[in-house]
Length: 204
Image 1: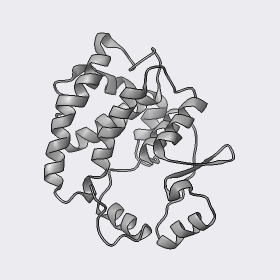
Image 2 (image 1 turned 90 degrees about the vertical axis):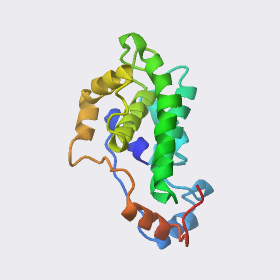
Image 3 (image 1 turned 180 degrees about the vertical axis):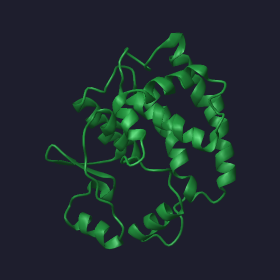
């Protein structure tokens, strides 16, 4: 859900949140036929109940003009990298997972974005902010929480990050007290296990 929060914040769209904390709440949503495919997150917007994070992001991007051409591959790459970060608390060997994330970030993902931002471009494509830019900012901040110097050899990405954080709506979202959430921790894992009634960690 965090990427959805980021994109809504960038679009200056206020939103209310309801958190699941028990398995009974999850079952009630299923019984009420509110969850297609029995999945969360669930976003209620424009009289619709939207599920699946990528589909929700696409809808919000279209609605608030944060969509651009030729974004598909860049967006997929960013989301793939963030998903690796999000499942870290569920990993059996988090150290090995972290090493893998760092390696793939430096060798596979960050070079693509460094090249896309060459020449002092403010945004990834089209000369305007899209939801891919918002996701890339989120992703780089997540990476720096785990690897403080990871952007040291990617000056274009670091400069992009600096420009993005100066946008007022994003600056507000980064301030203490906003609806931004930290990376998942042990409490998050415990809640997930309870809500979905899992007896063991989901397979990675």
